[in-house]
Amino acid sequence: MNNSGNKIKIGIALGSGSARGWAHIGVIQGLAEMGIEPDMVAGSSIGAFVGTAYASNQMEELEKWVCALTWKEILNYIDFTVIGGGFVQGEKLFEFTRKLVKYDTIESLPRRFGAVATELETGREIWFQDGPLLDAVRASIALPGVLTPVKLNNRWLVDGGLSNPVPVSLCRAMGANVVIAVNLNGDIVGRHIRNHARQPERTEKDSSNIEGSLLDRVSAQLKNSLYDRKNDLLSQLFGDSLDSPGLFDVIASSINIMQDRITRSRMAGDPPEIILSPRLSHIGLMEFDQAAIAIEEGRACVQRMRPDLEELLGVI
Image (cartoon, rainbow, N blue to C red; front, top):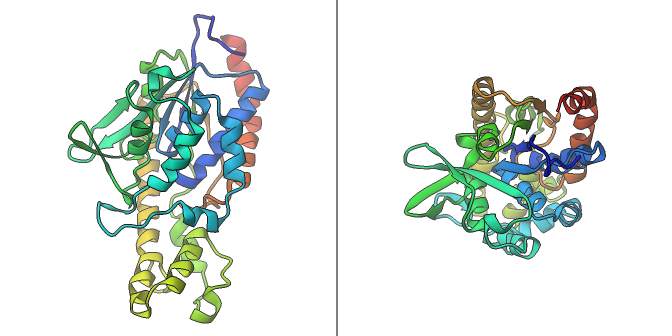
């Protein structure tokens, strides 16, 4: 059902959640199979990234790319830096994004689109509903401690998930009468720390053959390529000890807690008509090579909520 000619406008709010965000692809596919094609999309963080592909009618191309990603290919998109407020600059990733999305401005997109970022100095949420498209998306996904912040209009901007993880309010402001919210953070609190506690002690000998999370594999790759004297630093970053979590463990778990609490508060004050909550606690912050699993769970989530969605469609 495309409601572009009706009074009722359906919006979809795609939430933050890093690698779990590939589930948004499956959600959109599942909704389309039911005849639901939202008129507008608002995204926060990875939700803005996927939302850009949806608004530009490039979902098939995005799905093909993410499902082909391996952890080694992901490393090719990571441009490490030790300055600038994050470990990754993100320029290599956006070289691909520029090829995927053929539109320069938000207002030129075939479907209405909005993105959320957070002003670093004040904590205010910043809405992008017009202007340069890729600048808005790059600001929205600037995960603190991982991706470097972005300076736009003399303001330093970081991840939209810090202020509005599931941007229902932006959907409303864009004109949506009915909002479908996709919350990726419902079952993730403590996930990284629990998994960390279960990991066995690793040795240098078996680190090159590791089968753990992507962060573990990135750590192993870096260790093999850097000088031995940097191993202690990398252990602190990625968490090689059972005694304490690594820096990325702490960042991931802290962001999980924060986004869960903010999401609960924001949606209590501005509840959407439907909340879709994919079960994604098994996918870590940076496990972008798990796209097929995330997409399938996105589709499954829509099926679990099918009765509520059908009831909503009957009303509108």
